[in-house]
Figure 1 (cartoon, rainbow, N blue to C red):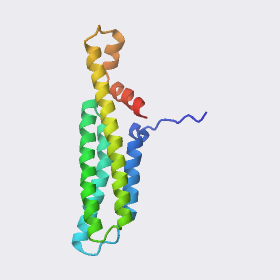
Figure 2 (figure 1 turned 90 degrees about the vertical axis):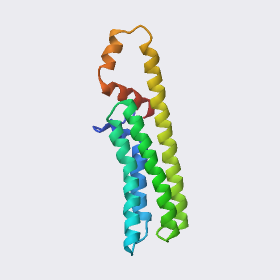
Figure 3 (figure 1 turned 90 degrees about the horizontal axis):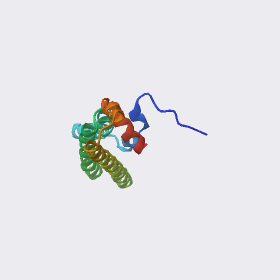
Figure 4 (figure 1 turned 135 degrees about the vertical axis):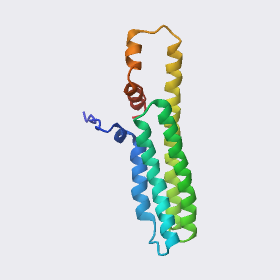
Length: 159
């Protein structure tokens, strides 16, 4: 019975967060040595956009469902930036063709995972709105009183 002990920082239990961090680690190793100032600028911007994926997942996870949804959409924008930087880095020889393909695969996987998380959050919000129209109970009021309960229930669904 290997029961996983939840992390103090709940976002660390999100698989999509782990994948985003893994992408950052991989990217730093996959980029070649930048020699010119413009290549260094491209590498810096690329790595920053990759970090923004994980940062937005983390930031959104500590907020309400609707805010989490918003931050996840920002993370998807950072993924699209990485797609552009992947093509640019490959085009100027900072990233091999194989690394370019791997980057695109990892970014597509992150996009799918974030999309699924967004859908899960939206389903949870719809269920909450539908419950608001039914007879309220004291238990429902107690759960609605904390923002953490919203995150916890969605978090449990996706972990």
